[in-house]
Each structure stands twice: as structure tokens, then as C-alpha cells.
Length: 183
Image (cartoon, rainbow, N blue to C red; front, top):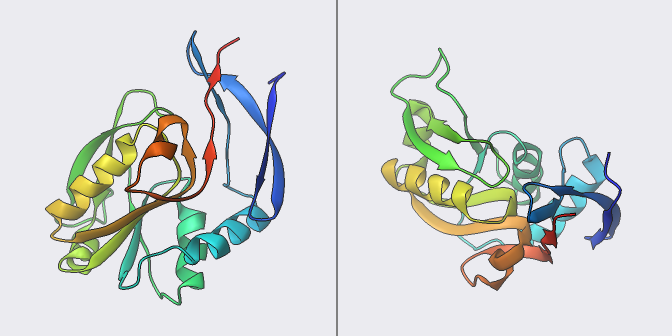
């Protein structure tokens, strides 16, 4: 159990995030929107104000971005959003996949699009979405997946830009999130 916490005030919500070591030098504040309905709604409402005009689809990676994508799609009046799955499922036909390395995922993972989602993305403006952007590994994989599917990345958005990601000018975010020294 964490003995350190970081107090986050975002979109009118206050949360105490546990600060957890991810290695012997670095710690992160554990931001988990999954299951937090009021936080997800509030952040999607604020993020919707920053989304580029002309966005046709929202694309997120499984799992933590799904509730945010659904709520943001609702805010933007969209009927559908797209989820890049972490494995090829039996129902998928003509799946397209790329590999992803993320700060919060151990090892390499795959991100896949089903053939039907590839057709949706093809020729359309796609907003890439995640809860947190840190090293940018997941976003890089989503960019590659979108481009392989023939889509155009119109923007990269998240709730929190962690560490050096807050200095990036190519992402849309609500607030920076600091990194911490491990204890």
C-alpha cells in the first residue's frame, strides 16, 4: 500500500493519487479513471472543448482509455469510437497490428484493429486518446496503426501529460502530472 500521495485537482474533481515506485529511481502517481464515473465525465466535458474541428473518430487503446473515449464521443455527438485491442480476437477479420511499449506495461504488447475498424479509419480524421501520455509509446503505436489503416491523425489527446510530455506542443491535455523520485 502506498504511503505517499499526490493531490490532483482536475475538471472540478479532487483525487489523492498513490505515488508508486516503478523502478529504483522513478515513481509515478497512479491515475486510474477506470470505474470513476464522475471524474471521467468531468474530464471528457473539459477535453471536448479542446478537440480539433473535423474529428471523425476517436481511437483509444484497450483498456483504460475506453470509458474516456465513450464519454468524449458522447460529448462530441459521435455515435461511435474505435478501440485498438491488445490481441487479435477470433471474430476479427483482416486484423492490422503494431507493437507497443509503454511505461506502465511490462514488456511489449500488440495493438490491433479489426478489418471493419480499418475501413472506418481509412480516409478519415482520427483523434488519438489516452488517459495519460508519458513517454509517448502508446501514442506512437496508435499513430502507426492509424497511418497503416489509411487514416489521418488530427490530434493526440489525454487528460494528463506526465513528466516531460507536458513540454510537448503536439498533444492536447488538461493538466500536467509530475514524476517523482523513488523512495
